[in-house]
Image (tube, rainbow, N blue to C red):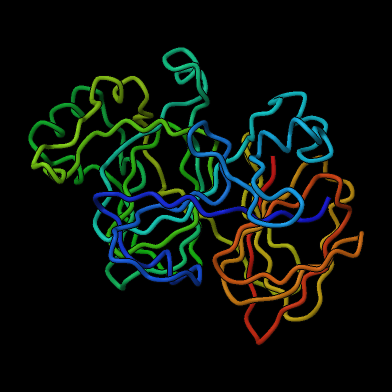
Length: 323
């Protein structure tokens, strides 16, 4: 199998902007696109192969056909035909709601789904763009409810000003919000579960406030303080830059200035590759070559031994994620 490219799944949202399409090199639109699901196996939003002999096949179709050769032996045994990651681009023209995601145990008990821990990689931000990432001090459930009621919840949260290249890890249970002006890559567990706590008194297109999920959120929240989840790394060229490794996924950053071989022969997993800047060429151990550019996400099958990545016209950066 060769590296696979998929059709983007565009999601119109109340808070979305107009940067995702030009970032991906697609024709601009006035429709507010808040999310682009780059790689998804969730029912109703399954990624579909964009080109080549498997064009029109979904991720589940490919897993049924190729099994461990596509996703890895352990992943296939654990997840079957369910793809174990969800990768998105998010464009926040306005502040997103303050929300929390359940962990695996709670999500299984309530919804028979996965929990949702996630990582953010900042692509663009205004000078005043911030993230809210967890409580700045210990909070009791009683104080939390009171602060929601009197609209002072933001005062309890860790606020971080962000810049391109910043990375954050948001484990399930951490209260958070993406601030206006942020354009990010989100790598997460395969789940769409969010409990909305406060939506800044926003109303939808029909003038109605969006639903809140306070009672569900209270059981999901980790009330301990958080340092904000920021991940420090040294942005060196021509080597793998590990960002984080969790029970749910592992992520790295690459900044090749010349042809760089990424050897994944010892890795029992697919590799999701997200080009975050520039353009280049990928060549695998079977001789397949593929030009890639900013905003594209590719799936490297688990059977692939290595990829050589060659930059074109200067800057070339990409993220990788695996399970």
